[in-house]
Image (cartoon, rainbow, N blue to C red; front, side, top):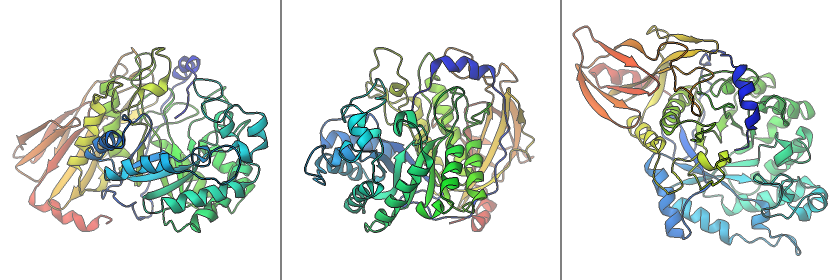
Length: 504
């Protein structure tokens, strides 16, 4: 996760416009990562996990496991496992072994981030950077020596192979670098698609020789371009990487991206330049398709909303967005959705957005978003996505800048049909900071009549509340939809007939 320049938020809000997301055709069915539910895999970043001892950290990770998370995206930084200074290749995995042990003891697997540079292997890192651990310009350590790329990609490849071999049984994916398109921060002095491509190809070959069967990911690109700020958009960077090496598709198995919404608007809402969280999938896929790699998987390896009172969203809104993102993302056939991040930390300055993205507050108590995670996992256990019923039910398609799109996404498992329904009523100026929470540019709610098969159905709220209701003789259930999703579980006898149509 990276910084958003607060002075740009008002400008971006003023430019906001909606490009209505149309669900793309399902991509070719692909094997899901180990531990995934039928709909896909929910993961979390490891940032700010609580606990000092192995037992305490395992307990923290187990909280995520109980809410349906099945993998942890974790840094295995080069400077952490190969201490700076002579002799070279003097690897020390004690600290990372302990962290991976905590993760796996909680029943989780890892998505390992192979990053970043190392001053012993980088001329620029040694002479232009600062101290390798914690140096640079705060609060985000710009110009830290470890972020400068190595002079020789094969040096990085040796580190990558060593790490991948050591954790070959625990990993479900290897991500090569992180947000390399934000060169001012992670690939100083500026992003370089050609040089990154050479490093990616070297690392790919090395990981494939390591004995690990986990896929190699093109390092997660920070998706949106932000007006008047440094960096290259995710699609733009990937396009340039293909331009420098048209065969780069042979150097990764899946594409990772980070579709953060700047400003922190609803996931369904498009604004100029960066589009929407959901539409980011289409933009990333379009680049790959142009180069003959449209069948490669797309993984979201970071996304989230901070609960910051000034420029983030409320805790309730964060929970709504978590529920909506999970239902919509897996309906897009994306196999992996990774949240940023585990927890918050104390921020006396009240100015650091990084401190507010978590599922848990700084004191360790859960936010509503944690309960939204768990409710989704329980309701959709064993379910596959079937179809988007939104338009067939007459739900509104939304409009530019005002939002107002209705969703009815049908999932099914043996003996049950589950429909996730909500109305994204937020406009470009809503749902963040101290502003309104939605419905000021259009109606706050809409009504829908959902066809069901059973005489009684269970309605589950996005935070886990449950009620059973009788269905009218018409066979249509009348519901009022707002921004908090409802999950309607229909166990009518014919629901199980659809199961054979789903990918397994």
